[in-house]
Image 1 (spheres, rainbow, N blue to C red):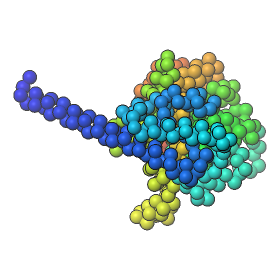
Image 2 (image 1 turned 90 degrees about the vertical axis):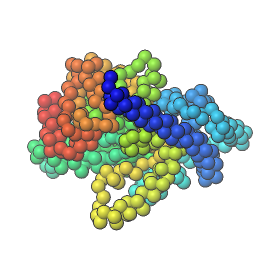
Image 3 (image 1 turned 45 degrees about the vertical axis):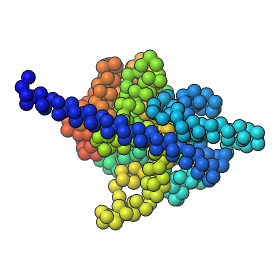
Image 4 (image 1 turned 45 degrees about the horizontal axis):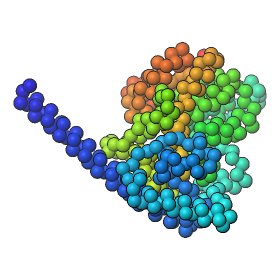
Length: 436
């Protein structure tokens, strides 16, 4: 080996070692910061909310056994996240404080009430709390595109659209709804759903936002009230997991399932391993690129992430006003608005209990659809997707070759696979629906 090649190899190895060392130091600091913030939020929540404050997940995995029955449905990634400081210092104090308060509440006969009330750290504007005025009927916000007047709904085809993480029904209504052909608009009823915890749908603080919660709410908000006995499903990112759960529940009702960038992982023998693998795959600890670093911080550090939500989500109206002033725009893009229209509680639990926790259930749902032989599953994935690896779609195709049809789109990423080619995507949907 030449001296020049040897020097280049040594430089790359040294650079990698330096980068790994900086990464270790940064995340060690975040471990410590999250531990400190755990105590701070405990005290502040206690002051503002009293017994109604929601417990965090800083305890050991075994601590969840003493909470309530809902914890059985929680993702292992909530308690299984490994911290260097998990069993040290402030975390231990926070656990002891929670145990002390629980014993005191039991002695005083106190109950954990009022979780439906808006938290001090969440936004209280009209848009964010409007769902509370509906007598808490648990219905999701649904945008319905009905057939033209004079046409009966009985003969209509139905399509349910499910958006992805940190998004809303606007992802579909502002794009695809306006680009479908007139013949489709004349024969299809379109339903765009704000998933639980996002957009204008409820964001209850006593909900764990599991896959079952999403399926039940969609059933109560769309399928049952509109008496749907036949429908197509279109979903993006996180919505793909919910779509597969719906399809597995109603295999005789579903005609086709279109998945865009599905976050799928083959299920390991141990469900906990699959959930933790999903967390590392979709939000692994890294400093670069910046977007990936942001995802890792928000997904691994509960209290650091809550600080960001207090700063940005709670004050989203101020940030929207500032953005309008700097960009000289009267209206913001729906993606800019949707990014902060959630609570930390809803985003945190959707990330862990749906994206991570549901990973261990996908093979089971796909097997149900495979045996039914009546549902068509079509995957559309951009080859430049940095959010959901291409291996996710390839693995699903390899494991269920007869069920899944894979369409890889060149030179597009996670969002531009739809937003960068809206008309082409709309035509693809029309072809899928017509051939189902």
